Amino acid sequence: MDETEKLRPRLNILGKAERRKRIFARLREGWAYDEIAGEERISAERVRQIVSEVLGKRVIDRGEDHAHLQLERLMPALRLAGESIGRGDIKAIAPLIKVIDRIDKHLATVVARDYYGPEEREKLLNKINSIIANLGYDPGVTVSPGPALSPDPAQEKTSVELPA
Image 1 (cartoon, rainbow, N blue to C red):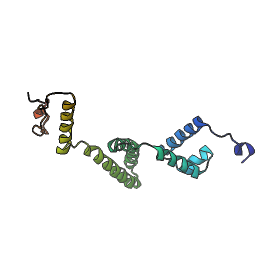
Image 2: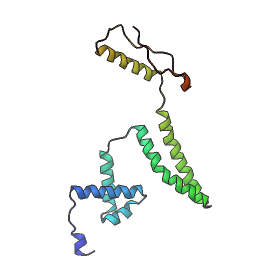
Image 3: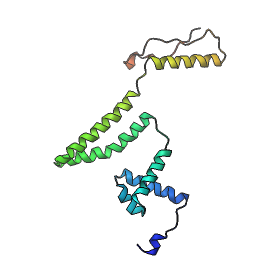
Image 4: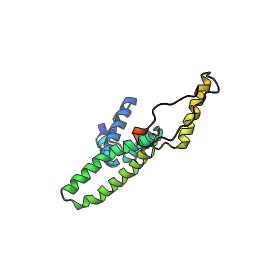
């Protein structure tokens, strides 16, 4: 290592932000910490620290948003594993099963959020009734629960009737 490599200038805020972007782009591409460290000319431990700092400051996504993000990230792995199996590589079967397992896990999160049960319905009705009261309407006017929605969209009621 010569003298110029040892004494490189310190990064400013913009330089650090660019380095973080490069590090996370390489992580998404599947690079290992030591490979990234070699390209960035820092230690693998420093790469781990940068990743840990960024993830520690990150705002946690809602479950379904995170699941959608993870599903998008898994699609290239699914495609590559499928192509490998298509070429006859039987070693790709185990990775394919792992990717499918992960996809199933995240799909369950996405599908589970669509449930709208009686508790949610009651909370919504209470909120509507409090809005009606706050707007100064007649206190006798409230929204009451109707029949449960049918899974058949043709039978689904699209309007709400308020008592007069």
